[in-house]
Figure (cartoon, rainbow, N blue to C red):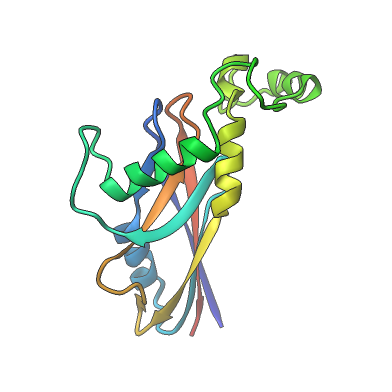
Length: 171
């Protein structure tokens, strides 16, 4: 069995949930892998991000977001409201976790406590999970005519550079 891995780099919008269509990139990785039949895993290493498989919708709102994504956001806003200040119903982040994050020497975690008021993003990503798997047949992912792959960043606090892992396994 052969294994082929590649990493995608994506940038979230900031200010709203980011749905980034990565379908074409994943299809190219599968083709470049040389693997004819097997499985393709698409996975986010970030705890506020998910990979989802959904129908592509041609209608867009003024932000350029597909209507199905806008509908999903509306539903999620009712279930998991945004964490806009430390005075909400969320216990996250606690004092010890805040101290830990503020002591990191990592450019992805600036020393600004406001950037980690994202308990809502963690909960939303937990609902959807970090990955999707796809069957590969004749060097093509089996997604049908309208199925697309989206990298979703639920953290709305700032624009961020994100990574997405793609692993293709098979013969």
